[in-house]
Image (cartoon, rainbow, N blue to C red; front, side, top):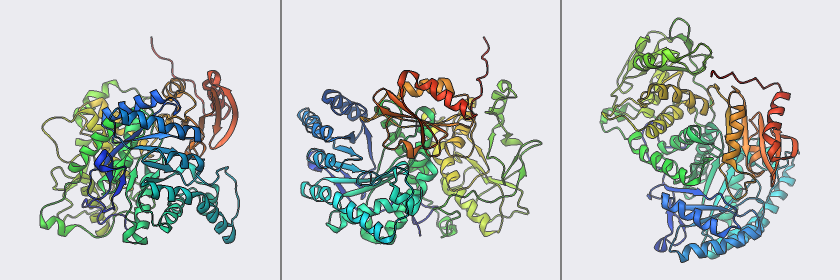
Length: 596
């Protein structure tokens, strides 16, 4: 199976076009040769018409091209009529998506008023109670028939009204039926979505797109790759567009880095027709990140023009695109005390100039510190488009600056050439191999480093990393560690999985996230999920140590893993009760006293 023509040369996946509304009257076309579409979601209560209209206007002003609004009940879905009517009276033609999870009847109401209905196969007509049950083939077929009966009316109504569908699976909300047959896996996500797609096709309805979201960028990348490969196997007419996103990415740098790794990697491979960057911030903040990310892709994917280079590109992948596994290498010394490769951590290398600026400020107990200096390494720098020789496997190698390939392609080619030579040398990754005379703006440097290094780490390539695109010494060092944490390669600080707010959210996510961080951000290696409601919460935080989930208005449920431990805690007490829970499970340490 293949998910793209070549891992070395960018070629956008050819998809069919789907219509979101009437393009002649402000609608949008997704897919085909059309530019990638930016979208986001409002965060207020859907019953608050004025706030919903204003937040939609704010998103449109920021450049958002499609706006999503949650409709958890029939009553919410019915109010979409008033929201859309006010927007159209104001001359705002942006297409609206109704976000549906548990209630088919809400979807059948929403489809009357909006251009797109998003359904989640994991909970639209299925159940998730984390129940363990063996399904016989007959029982499984009966469940599929029940789902078809529930979903078909929406498909027929979408077809009649010329609406679109988004079939959106989430890693955190696979149904018990899918979990028991396929496990909590990318394959389960794909099969769940394909069940709904088959129902659409039975009724000759094709105006739909897919999404495969996860809070883990590596899982998200694997899911989309596997989806596209499966669609290609099913036939040329299964070329439906793809919506990209890392769900529950969080806020600030961490949210942007996770999103850049997942979305950027796939865009560089030619996948993706519409994107959303999910941040635990005011939603207009998401749109500039989308814009910046899309602006980077042409420079990160420029195709080689020299015939000789094209001829040197292998046809095979130098990594398994569907199952993450770190490339096997021997250990090698970076200096007298730090080793890389093998089972060692992926190491952080800095330039001499950066080291000279940050070293005087580093304390022995600090986790964020340089582990090697680039100029001091015993390093072989090669042009992978040209023949080269290596005498032993412990030689650290990298791509030399100025190679006429984009960085991701160049490092993949280096891994492929080493494989052809039968060598397993450790590789030093760089975020850039071509330097511009003017330093990159910090927001662009962050995204570029995250896309390039994160993409390669998700491929399993890389034993040490070097960030040079960020000109600030301290910022570049911190960025390197943040990329490793977001890619799941190292853990040097508390890891937060935080959903973006929406109309289902039962508390102020930004305020609560800040409050939890104040109390817990010193806990190295602890993962905390902060979820506004139970739609994706228990599943999406399955690999988190602890969870803080809105259970009812002003009431919080606390989880250990995906098991609810404490229920209906008053919001005013919940953060301290979370701290108590962390202490009970032996994960708490007292924060270091601050000087002064």
